[in-house]
Length: 181
Image (cartoon, rainbow, N blue to C red; front, side, top):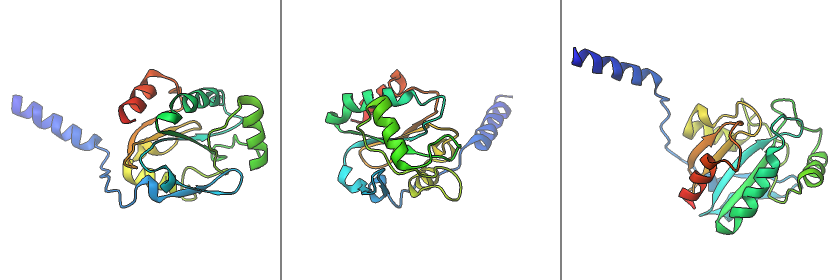
């Protein structure tokens, strides 16, 4: 009976396995993205730093998380954390252009951490960062909504992902950031 029980558990585990094997042909530091002001952000410049990538949107119910993202940046940037906001209209909640997004972030939240240009984060047109994340970490790395968070460790590999509901200054995120810094 025990053997049958354990066999059943193994079968269930097999079916719920994500089946993604992170081979990391590239690390995060091999990628880049255009900044909100048009320069290329080359992640090689951030090698050996942890990075929190967050897809953002100005009209989302989670937009107030910008405040905590700025707090996180202020608290941990000197310890080796890069916070990167990636504005996206994938979920139809972003402003029309980069200038409007930049002004919104500065006026309402005094954001000074790096922001990317408005970028697709899901599907065939997703930016290379998000395709890379899905390939190496599976479905949990794919944003299901705005303010999805991907935490990259100092080796340029995904450490963890967090849903939109997980606030940037939550103990859950803080604990994981402190583990990898």
